[in-house]
Length: 226
Image (cartoon, rainbow, N blue to C red):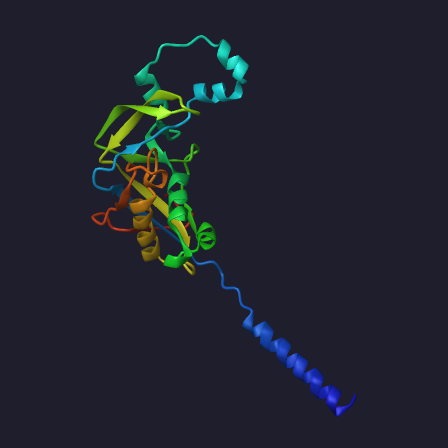
């Protein structure tokens, strides 16, 4: 082999070694912790879970629905079926509602890419129904007029929860996010996105929230009891 060929080969090996040294994938740095959020100001939470009756109606064709005998409305029953329950029967909020709110609030202009956030944060919810239990001072039944289809209106009976708060166990990739990042993003989501019916994301004012600073952030053991 000529001196020129040997020099070229060595240069190629050096470049390969340099590339191999530069490519490094850090292990996931998992962190579990718990934050508590509370109602922001007077922004109540209104839930609207799909009842089994509503699901059955969706399975019917338009012709089949026309043949049904119209039942008398029962506001208490309709409002009760609009609540979300844990497997143990506690009233709560779907865990995914919070993650969706955080992702919606994320934007590259504020340093939080949606694609990165989807892979870096998870709500820990061991409940089989995917519901986190919440606390509240009072629940009342709302009667609201809603638009259905084109130029049609109907009444909806839904529960309104006042002075609500909820504890949320969270898992993050601590290499991509810090606890303070999550706190800041949660406050942004609570300010401009919200959860539940008629939230800011849907041109409403309900379902706004903020991190409860009176409750300390609690670090949790990995894969422990959340």
